[in-house]
Image 1 (cartoon, rainbow, N blue to C red):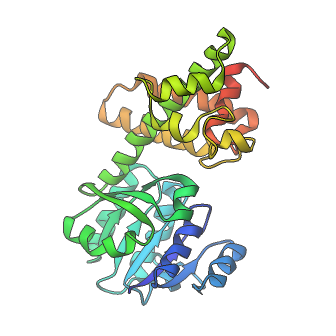
Image 2 (cartoon, rainbow, N blue to C red; image 1 turned 90 degrees about the horizontal axis):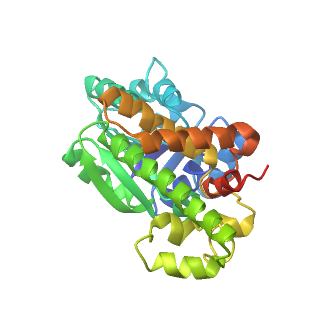
Length: 296
């Protein structure tokens, strides 16, 4: 079993840290929220007093942070995780951030003689709780293999996407597709409603036909057909609309940087911006069906 410093105990990071404890690892945690730290401590983790304290004296550091700026703040600088980490420490950043920041932190870690993976996840809060996340990793294969025992305590699908930053690249490509297909499914159900189709009937047809997709089978935007869907609990988030907007904007930034044309991704980002700017960012992504219906 490994010793791990875990920084960032939000909706995703909290259950991920608890799963590492449950897997038998020694986990030291830090977050700006004392409540989040206390929750992890009650599950068996130890509390760290700072980023540097969490990153020192451990074999692995795992971070789960909101945006690229937070990742730079935590890793870089005189009191950051890179400066505090012992020689041989492996750094694992599971935040979803821009590729440029991921590559910059990789470079800083390498300069300090440390190994690193960017390892963003897919699976939402449900996957974080269940320990079934997919990790999309960027870095050296040897580091990926070394980190697999830790990552497997939080997820069931571990994929090496390529070199530094390519885990983030895979994540934003994946979530761009998720955002676009969610909108397509929502549009189809609204059209079906207006044409008089029953929700269950339309679901049964689409789920066994060419429209079948993850957004339909796991997060159907209408109550009934998929019992676990947020549509059955008033759109309480499994994956909040504001987070989808963040990821769609990361994809648009990457498309501009790389010169790739992503017109449907751009349209999805614009629609989610409208939805979130109307005060709906904390609702589940599937709640955007309300915008398509013209509600609110």
